[in-house]
Length: 240
Image (cartoon, rainbow, N blue to C red):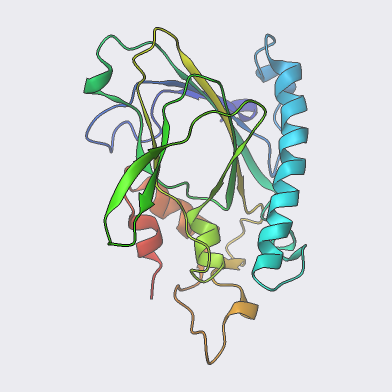
């Protein structure tokens, strides 16, 4: 990713059975900062400002989630969970046959936490499990000034299954307007092969055995890039 900035349409283009209907600019904000000159001038100032604001939101949410595990507010941040940041800006063009494609196939986010801003067009859906064991797709209707927070696969693993990553997708809308969304994905920043991730030690005891094995970031990323986006194999890959 030269200068921390890249352009794509589908992260799993050659692994998925079909392509999704979108264009994407991806900007890596951590562990290393991007070269500002690589960010398009038309949105450079806004992108840099949004990174600062979204990081503050991510820090606050991660602190509450850490406390929800019975740990100190800084525990997840101390595990470098805010340091590996990637901003992904999706543009979903108007589609002449929206019933024949998806904006984003059903998937869960692989990292720790996602902070998402979406415009007013709509199309985001989450899978809701009902008490009778069935599931259905529910619209996440845009609310002006609100953000969407997603728990990722890695946080599910680190929390020893106490938090669950959420399946979501983007359907193509029938309105004659393009859709735009901006997500910041928070991931661990320490990526040496001597650093292992897995259930936090404080959450494992004789009464609460580990549900996942430990792994390096290299192994985690390798498992991610070997699958197509719609696969749930990432969490299952590390399950004991």
